[in-house]
Length: 111
Image 1 (cartoon, rainbow, N blue to C red):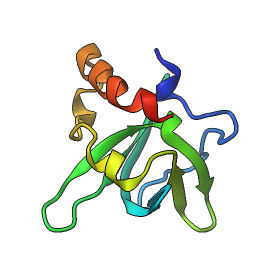
Image 2: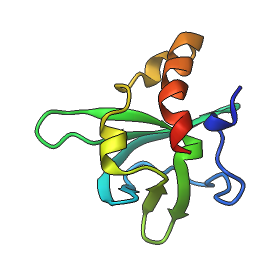
Image 3: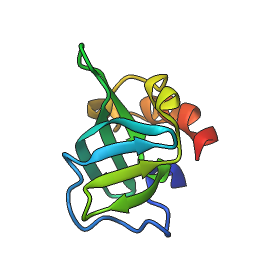
Image 4: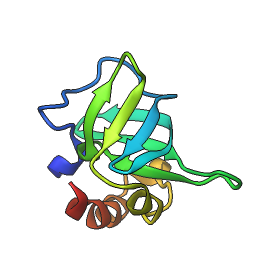
């Protein structure tokens, strides 16, 4: 499994659920974390970026550069546009190698 799906050592693995946290990019607010999960070596966030129509993105844990537990914010290593252009939410299919590889192909250059 790629390091993309694990939290960076400088961030650490969060000891609480990040659902409901604000997601901040390098250029400001992106959306809200609608789910966070860790399944073995597979850790990721689902970020709701939809304003009018519901849109969400699966974001691998390695894209998280900081977690502010008190302020309930996660800071990503990407800007808003990069997250919005990412693959659609496929969290239910992350067990499939092809889905993980497609998501990894997009996010790897951004970490």
